[in-house]
Image 1 (cartoon, rainbow, N blue to C red):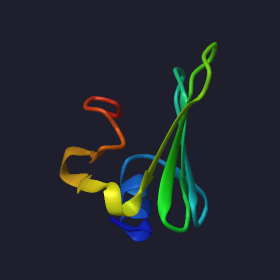
Image 2: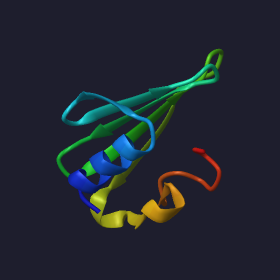
Image 3: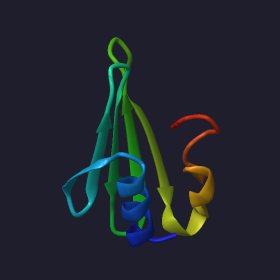
Image 4: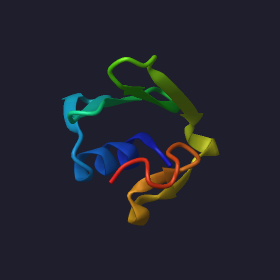
Amino acid sequence: MNADMIAAWAAQNGFHSLNASNFRRQDDARTITIEIKKMSVVLIDERPGSRPRLVSRLFKDMRSAIESGRFEGLLPAGYLP
């Protein structure tokens, strides 16, 4: 897993690019932001009335599951459509 793979996945799954390393997706229920760092990725899930949920993983610890539309180890099953 690397930054280019995450950026490509984000673009294919409805995330809008804020800049080269930040992507955001919004709907009525929540806002999800993906921040690509030097050696890791951070996912921020914000829902009205709740604290933001932060998930961070090093690239080396992630397994890609792009075909299923999610990242193993970062997003639980059914987290994104």
